[in-house]
Image (cartoon, rainbow, N blue to C red; front, top):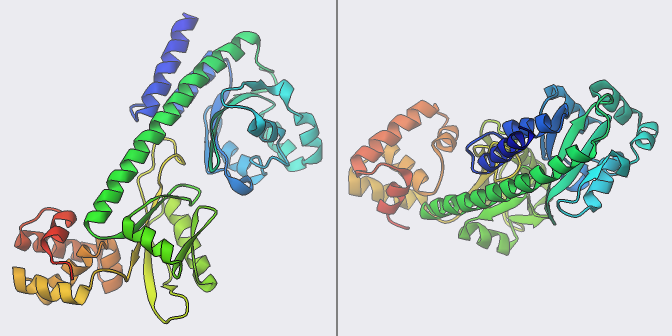
Length: 363
């Protein structure tokens, strides 16, 4: 019966990696077969950031408080400090850490452990890469104590399945990013795809060319930033809200160095995976380079009998802008723009933005 429970938990991890089950269900299965309060899938970034933190078996506030007290900081939490030094799939239990000393030195962290009864853990690294880290842990109470030999063995077994699932999901999301980048190429968009930590995970050819020029946008530790320091905070704020899954945000214009030329950057959230933090979370589209919208609008009106308003919107769509961005710029409702888009598609004889861009001339 115990082996069947372990096998069932392993299948849940395999299904989670394929998007056929939730990561929370897999973590719940891990907690159940190890007699733990819950389990944790955590991602650690630079500067003690925690871009991924899925905890099960505990209130939502537990994870929020963990981040707030610096739980992801190696200087505060020896479970993180020692854990980061371990190899992938090397299992560490509470005997490897200095939690009692951590609590004496960091009262807020100590209060978090006491409040949520997080006195013991067993953990391992699933993925260790220069700019990406994912770990798996058990959440155990003071009463449950440290894991015994059998619980440690079961944890080690399921950690292998968890790592395979994480790598499967990363591979699938990389493939999805490539497909999305191809779609953006088709509409000649200058687009970047960023993960939960704000790092660029993919880009179109025109985006790569823009970065190479270095006079508008640059990469700093893998994160997109502006060449002009005065524009940096606007872009950072838009990117932060987009990766958090908020409504589309429109960043302030980014200036080109030593000129009065500006580009407009649209930041929008992408659908999150079942374990937020693994794949791309935000799409950034740079407008202002490439398609001459005025000339495309004239051509669209002449070729397909579009009205002046429809011609202008068709040109904006061909430049890679979303209906939401167009509505914002034209100061009309999104519903109005969507109605116009439907009429444009009908007149041109297409069913998508990609098809429309293919029908309009490159000017």
